[in-house]
Image (cartoon, rainbow, N blue to C red):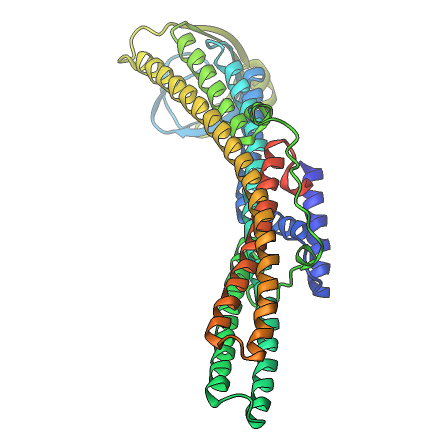
Length: 449
């Protein structure tokens, strides 16, 4: 646990240095930053620390006694029993006592041992809970990161189209001056330019909104600039099916190793031990206790009385005791029966939840594998469509300059081309996201991909 905290601190320091340098953050760096600064992670760390403390307490309760010490002092005025003669006297007295006692439970229906097992399971569940929180954070950051890349690239595409539109407007204006184009053509081209500039503003707004979502997930300061690494868009991309295992193999691995499955299994095991504890509570309990005590007394109101020295009384008045207690539960308003019935119901509930969790994991694995393969097929199709639409766009752009098509017809072609570009980007990022989910179910965490 300490090594884990040191690693997170080191990651935080490294990312802080990157922030100071204002370097673009990769997807991996964003996920690390989000995990290191997540309040959900801090809350789960605190819960895990509580589980460790509860395990320690369970061990100490099972194998160590309880020890207590006490003292008292009081003065008595009036009639009282003289400790020396056991007769009533009327005098002021002072009494002082000291005691030490201890006790340990020898048998309590194996409740202490079962509590140790339950606490050990809770510690293991805490580790799984931490991993689950990290995975959820990383997946959410990944989705937000790809949204930022998508809208950032769409802004770049729209800017390039706007530059082309401005060049076309300039060219049409020159042709208008030469008498080769009419005023209507110029107005239509200017309207097309205004339409593209409007789309650019919308794309920029969507990019800023996606960036805010990413900042919120990372707990990044809203007033600071967050630059993301665009190399994932600029690098050549060739989609390949990385799912070499069958869906059944991936599902079988996930059923055993997925954090949700381990947590659900841990809860079921805890319920089973709680049921065993409830059944053993009908047996008697055995405990051992012992103690030592001493006292000191004097009569400060009597001039004719000389008190025995404190040290002598402390030594001579001392006494010890040893006690073995056996307790039989006879009648407690059926509370033990009620507890047993509740624990049985709790075990059935946890078993059902465990089965439901395994079914959900299997469904998620199947869906993730299908989504990954579907996203890959969609990417290849979108790539073909984009290439065809780009060629159509270039050809119709030349036709527009030659006056063979109207600006309205060209706008339709342009919109088809932009939609094809957007769908290609979306298919690319959807495949990256879905393939990461498949790798996750294969046992590779998002931070290790």
